[in-house]
Image (tube, rainbow, N blue to C red):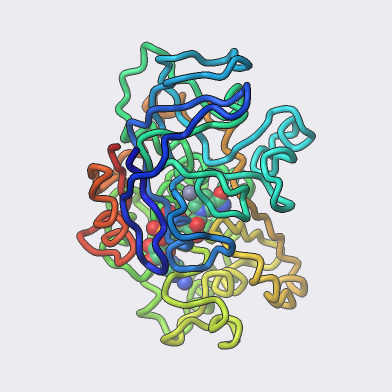
Amino acid sequence: MKAVTYQGLKNVAVKDVPDPKIEKPDDMIVKLTTTAICGSDLHLIHGMIPNLQENYVIGHEPMGIVEEVGPGVTKVKKGDRVIIPFNIACGECFYCKNHLESQCDNSNQNGDMGGFFGYSGSTGGYPGGQAEFLRVPFANFTHFKIPESCEEPDEKLCLIADAMTTAFWSVDNAGVKDGDTVIVLGCGPVGLLAQKFCWLKGAKRVIAVDYVDYRLKHAKKTNHVETVNFEQKENIGNYLKEITKGGADVVIDAVGMDGKMNDLEFLASGLKLQGGTLSAIVIASQAVRKGGTIQITGVYGGRYNGFPLGDIMQRNVNIRSGQAPVIHYMPYMYEMITSGKVDPGDVVTHVLPLSEAKRGYEVFDTKTDNCIKVVLKP
Ligand code: NAD
Ligand code: ZN
């Protein structure tokens, strides 16, 4: 089959790889119809996630039609239309039973965190979903079955696999409530979708920060938020604190390891990005009010464990963070889309055949061609 493979720094290629096979009784094989590129995939191609081999198949926002099921699979059958979450989870362990499917105890033999599709050896080494077919382990639990009556297009539904659900979880996990002022750092798909959910949760003020003008314009036009281009401010953290009169109740970091820097430079530079701009987590620690909450949704690798916590501790700031436990939110996201409560579709700017994945990565990474989210069609 054809699949998107990692080929070293900033390089991917669509290559022929072996078709996946049922390996365990509760595996299924899904023939993918749609699969998106995530900001997390950029961290991979920027070399920021350890334990990544060349030719590894990447991608973790897939959906499609069940092609084959193992003898232990009872919850889906051949022909069902399914969305596959980025989390691989057993559904039986302590974490799965307590709605923390992103930390499933049984899906990652390589480390003390859950297993994910297409996200290197450190999250289990599972081949990813930017491909024609995907092997789904723990298939009875690791899926959302789309009702047959559903007429929503793949381009919206695939966002349930990660971007939309992660955005919702970020806002929920941060505890955004009536009357809050929320700053969302990052106007990529996750940040843009989080802005919508801030309003739904009753926020009275939502401020979006980025340095890419067309994304800020999109945020203003689509989500009716205030926008700030951080490259136009000398000290963005202080500026945000000033305009929120002491800091925001909640700051959501929807940035993570920005692709403009490498992490060793980051630590060596005293937490400053090249060009003198601060990293998102530092901006967040300045822009949050005393006793407020920072939600870290942007992905940071373990090497960031040197982050200095002084400011946060001294100001009673709460830190919430993690990999979104997507699975149990999926039915709710589906209901939001089909009831018309939230339409996530505006973030999808590019729908390309899988064969053009390289171009998709290029425009998404370089923030050109007004790209916000790329969806691939295998
Ligand atoms: P993206 O790369 O499209 O968006 C990031 C945005 O942040 C870009 O528009 C970029 O211009 C902007 N940015 C860069 N530096 C900034 C700064 N210092 N301040 C404000 N904005 C800045 O990616 P995305 O798909 O929206 O994902 C966003 C982040 O969320 C990534 O780190 C991704 O890995 C992470 N993510 C986490 C989870 C999870 O479960 N925690 C799930 C999905 C994605
Ligand atoms: Zn993702």
